[in-house]
Image 1 (tube, rainbow, N blue to C red):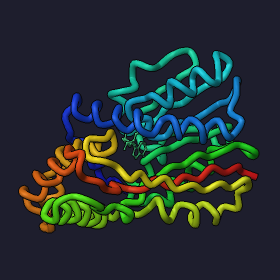
Image 2 (tube, protein in one colour; image 1 turned 30 degrees about the horizontal axis):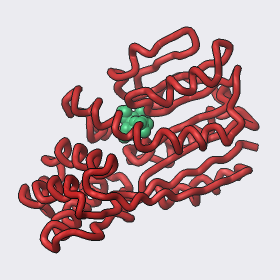
Image 3 (cartoon, rainbow, N blue to C red; image 1 turned 30 degrees about the vertical axis):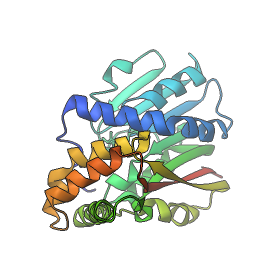
Length: 264
Ligand SMILES: C[S@@+](CC[C@H](N)C(=O)[O-])C[C@H]1O[C@@H](n2cnc3c(N)ncnc32)[C@H](O)[C@@H]1O
């Protein structure tokens, strides 16, 4: 099992909470639709891997009701520790190491989690092991290979594309796959699941939008790691920030690939 550190581990509490809540605001509505498409209902036992700031955990807890259960797992539970309730259990640790019973969940959800693991395939195997026969997975992962500046001044578009290259290099140097999302359907297909639904969401985002603002937050937090790749300068990072705020710019910051599938 990999011991590589999660890239946002050393970020400031308030900044990281703000970033995670920005992700939730943009992506929760679509994630909830995917979760509902499984037929999720009261009494289900659900697992949220990489619970982050916890909005999906809370929503699932209300959907499964007091006789259902949600287990929320994260490497760092600082933002979800206070969610523990009669039907929510919060567990801190790597999903690969936690002593969860095999075939014990009706539904497992993870969004933007596997990509942060050099051994993403092993995490996927673990997730599938935890699902009951007839149970569901809803996995959503980014594909940063889709990222590109579309409209804006040439110099700022170039800077944004340099930062995109730094994102690729940072993931690669840590043994992680920056385009994992695009490979997710093929990886999951190998497990012979049924009711397999694949979707790709590519937001063409205006400067100042939620997506652009969230990606600016990530860039500020990860600036040192991007600079360490040697393919960007601080000037590129500053340009990226201005591009992300400017309503005259448009970019694809990444695509999200989702797979909803049922275990046989
Ligand atoms: C980008 S955040 C996404 C948070 C949340 N899923 C969301 O989309 O709003 C990734 C989260 O996954 C957690 N994580 C990554 N790898 C993990 C692992 N192997 N086991 C448990 N948690 C993990 C990180 O600690 C982090 O909180």
